[in-house]
Image (cartoon, rainbow, N blue to C red):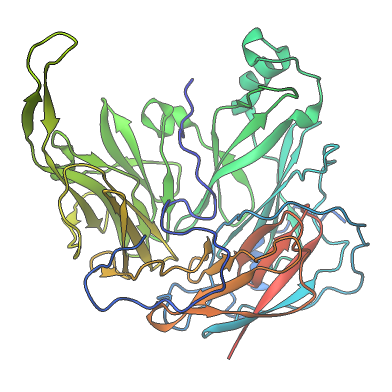
Length: 504
């Protein structure tokens, strides 16, 4: 069976590929261009629900969806960013003491991060790691809390833990992973086509999250297991993808992919308060599917222009106002004869493609009726045209066009109107938040100094956050998740730090 998702993308930004890069410079001011688009190169009981935990943060802790550039409460989603190679150093004990009381992130423009080391004893129970010290915990976040998926490579179980504040955790029921039974049985049998001898070490197989999205009232997660062997030239083995959804109860229910999707195949899924959307294929043609809960999917309609010969469509993006679909239209078909004459190997006749291609964006409130947007600054080209769209938060979209090797970038707050960005306007690697996000900028010396973190203020100006307090071990490989109480960071799924945003 072919993998349902053939393209793996980093969890911290599924929508945009070329717009945001991890750079080694400080956060700098980046304002919108007023002109047309410019060129841009102990284990807790599982009986309690996550929703009751969320209510314990404080009144108003549940975020509301408001535009990113106005005062807003953070309602983020999942993230994961690359980090520096860990350094060898003694591991001090976890801090002791009572857990702090945390409220929701502040309203207003953030100006700093105050770090605290979270006392031990309340964290999720992490399964035994492999000899190399790799963690079996995967950290994610959503608008009302944080989630860790605990993979036990010895028992081959997947257990979710949830927290509304990153301090107190509840274990949920184990996920149904029967979708991987046949694949893992094949791996265990060590057939010749695996390429090398398996040493029967359970830690050879590790759980990975490939997609994590939040919809109107549910979470959706796609994951797989990756197994590998020692030795030169060994090739990793991947199970098929499995999908689950969950509501606030913390229970994750498996989705029957063969029933939910045509042929059991799906593409990159984007989720928002509006719903979920994905681009797949039906009868050898592109097809759109939308869903309110991630379990029942309804066929959508593509714009007529992208169904014409020579035109293409790429991954759609869901946001608070609806959906945006990127594509490339063949506006004019044409071929010009060329050749040297004479026939044979010495010469011959051929044809040069002189068709004109134009990047385009369409907006839809429901995934069925589409209106083409205007993009100022783009032009038709004979070749080398590609366009992608993603979101910086629930309300802020960004589009990136590559035309003949040059990047053009636009930003939109409504999915209709697009404004050109100056070159390299976005300051670093995105840590996504549903109503507010952070950008991480790598330190000049990753092993010794802390990275910088920025937010986008008025007019999309980049503001670097001051950092203070008991900061994480920046020389280690860290997972980060931006949730309702702040930026939660972990090394192994049991030792945590929280960056508490400050404002004013």
